[in-house]
Amino acid sequence: MSPSAAAPSARQTELLEAAYRYVLAHGLADLSLRPLATAIGSSPRVLLFLFGSKDGLVRALLARARADELAILDPLRGPGGPIGLTAATERVWAWLAAAGHRPLLRLWAEAYARSLVEPDGPWAGFARATVEDWLAVLAACQPPAERDTGPGTTRRTLALAVLRGALLDLLATDDEPRASAAVRHHLALLDG
Image (cartoon, rainbow, N blue to C red; front, side, top):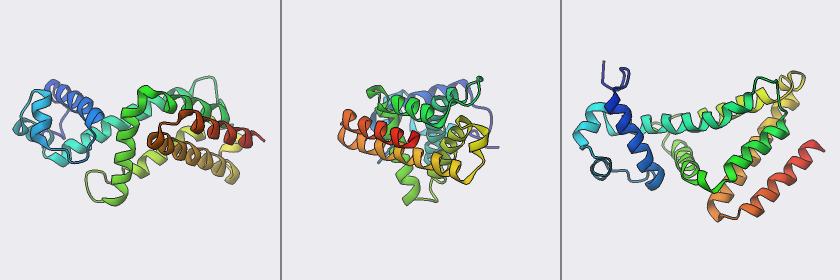
């Protein structure tokens, strides 16, 4: 069993968190183990031992980012029953539009795009998995009578498409008022 397949050690968890903070600040493009290791107080050899390979480390970092993403979405599945697609979309957008979340969202966008152009690398399946995660959460927010219908699937797919499009626009332009106005307009149409 490789070190990365076993339960993570305290050192592996510590280095993963430090590496995660590093990639939130610097991105994954052109990630090199030597500068990363220096920045987090380790060595390339230790990182390779703990994560098996650079690809193993990238996969662990993407899993860590996905855990943050799911933590954002989990409260929408509240115990009080479905909150509705419009309310869920509003809450998600409010989180996405907050300036403090841009590092995670830039990392998400980079990993999403790389998984589309490098489908066999460490990014494999990242884009599909995040779409499925978000659609599942949005489905849980819909009333049961709507959730399992064709129109229900279409409504949550459209909500996700608008959120993702507005997010990419926001990351590109930093024009939060314009992107938020577009999301609010979409929500009004969704409720229409």
